[in-house]
Image (cartoon, rainbow over the protein chains, first blue to last red):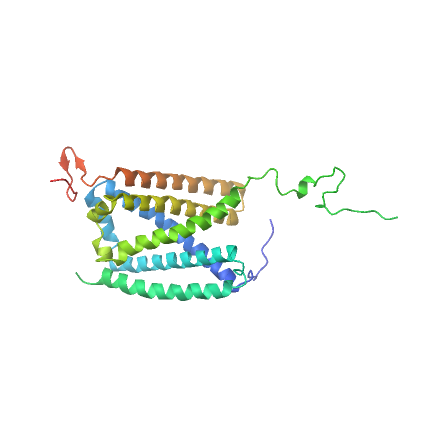
Amino acid sequence: MPTKPAGTLYRGREGMWSWVGHRITGVVIFFFLLVHVLDTSLVRVSPEAYTAVIGAYKNPLMALGETGLVAAIVFHAFNGLRIIAVDFWKKGAKYQRQMLWTVLALWVVVMVGFSIRHLSLALGGH
Amino acid sequence: MTATIDSPRSGKNSSGKISPQYRRTGASRGNFEMFAWLFMRLSGVVLVVLIFGHLFVNLLVGEGIQAIDFGFVAGKWADPFWQIWDLAMLWLAMLHGTNGVRTIINDYAEKDSTRLWLKIVLYAATTVIIVLGTLVIFTFNPCPVVDGVPLPGGFCPA
């Protein structure tokens, strides 16, 4: 088996780090999806069972977790559209760096809006 | 005296064909990987719409997450529009995610047997989740009854 050369970094910069981010967010979203189908399936057990498990999503710590999850989804979505542009748009590869910074700028805008709305609803007193 | 050596992929070796070790097709998996690549892009675009819509309607409108309970789900699935929406989201997201994890397994699991077992576990989980989710959407009952008694919290016709 080949041994790994020490201290190398493949290419680096925007191209590699967006790829790393896409993988990590993808795996996180996938495992949440498995859990989310299971918790939703409790509607077939009883109304009380579903309401109890959904209640767990409404505590303050989970509200932060949901915000993190949505941050992962929004990055994966926008960067996914960037990947499609790199693959199908003639000038996609040339502008992949600028497109990543656009993705990150849009991600910040969407996440600021989402966080304010979701956290004020989830943490706001009732 | 000079000998002419043709390029291995020139198609000019003694048999007049590309030598088997240089052939890129043949004992391959057909176009499976190309369809998988294309599926990731097509499903990805659709999922952006489906999931952003899902998050908007469930978390940002009205009371947001505070409004989600059994009645909220019953209200949505009373409408075939949301049944189809959720069904499409379930299938596309699971297949998109499964193919992504398959790619990651292929990249990082070096032993053949490790790759095989990880993929068996992955495909088993995918099958269970897709079948379960599909059944839940289509067999949902807003008024569940056990032993002739409606369960509390259900929505039963008066």
